[in-house]
Length: 229
Ligand SMILES: CC(C)(COP(=O)(O)OP(=O)(O)OC[C@H]1O[C@@H](n2cnc3c(N)ncnc32)[C@H](O)[C@@H]1OP(=O)(O)O)[C@@H](O)C(=O)NCCC(=O)NCCS
Image (tube, rainbow, N blue to C red):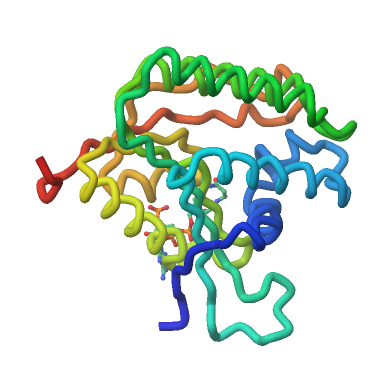
């Protein structure tokens, strides 16, 4: 089997964004960076992800799926898919949530968005996703599928399923519900892995001049039988 899932170390976060760019364009990535990405834009994204990983040890779990049959000259170092999960194993207090918000606001001051970043659209998207996480999860323990993407040209051969297997097994081991915001392309895969639609995110990318609404479904998967009590 040439497909293997491996942890994605911090030193390779740039590769994560490169794969996401091929998976989410057209989509959220070119809404976020309408004029394309510069070297500075990539550094900005990678630095933000590293900060989160350093600040909250054990929360972020990033993976790459590699295809060992690809040649050594492959421009993505044989990475054909990525996934990014977050685990919140305990109920969080209002104080903890407030502290996180303060740190995030401080980051916004210290690390301003690069000029090509569509801040208005992303703030709207972020406000919608936050409101729906508050509605369906609140402060309860849960696991989040933040991002899953398979490189263009490698989709529909089981790359995404390899990451879904890791995530659903981990959620069941921990007895946690899994939450995600699904694109139309991901919906079928998520249903196969036990997710159910609970709502539609009220975000419409056309308000920001994007040609497609980029509709996202809110999907939840309860922990399954083999979950620990
Ligand atoms: C959504 C996404 C991650 C799925 O990744 P993937 O690697 O294509 O996932 P899989 O191959 O495991 O499964 C996808 C589909 O291919 C089918 N499939 C899997 N192996 C297959 C094979 N060998 N032959 C034909 N179909 C196959 C699966 O049954 C599934 O079908 P479905 O969508 O009708 O349910 C990928 O399409 C992607 O990156 N899309 C763009 C970005 C995006 O929208 N990401 C989701 C964010 S929520």
